[in-house]
Image (tube, rainbow, N blue to C red; front, side, top):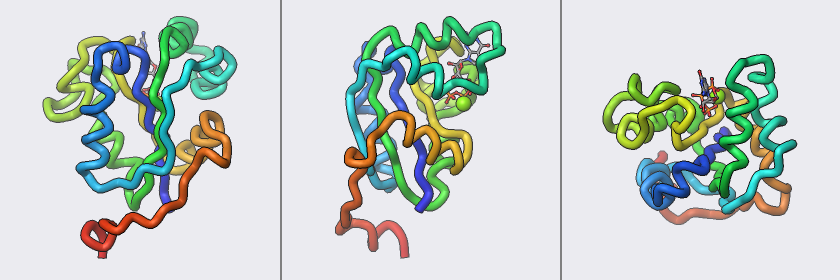
Length: 149
Ligand code: GTP
Ligand code: MG
């Protein structure tokens, strides 16, 4: 099944947006597979954003991600990767539509509150970076037949 690695960045945690953001994914109907509050070691942040290593903002990005606890999540469902990206909104929050997480809560690209995987492959890759196997739950959700046929 398709999974997305979604992370509430340190600014989202500090600003008290954890419940609001989790609620959006719960309300949409995706299934929670893993969840934790986590202080990120530098090497984990570097591995996660390794494709951006050559960007001028990379050192600041890593410092931002390790600046405080994050909330790490894995959400499962058909189409969850693209849908989560839509729910999160454009990378630059002033360009993000109202109704999206960044559109509702953020101003700057360097403080854009939340991460979502950009492909199903990266959903798998990032989940393996942030979670140990035993932290992922397979569970029967009784609501599922009311969400998907
Ligand atoms: P993520 O979900 O966090 O991966 O964001 P994204 O997929 O919308 O954007 P991308 O992967 O291109 O960039 C990753 C993160 O780097 C962004 O979310 C920003 O936090 C940061 N970032 C990207 N571009 C800039 C920039 O021009 N300046 C700064 N300061 N940060 C940037
Ligand atoms: Mg990205």
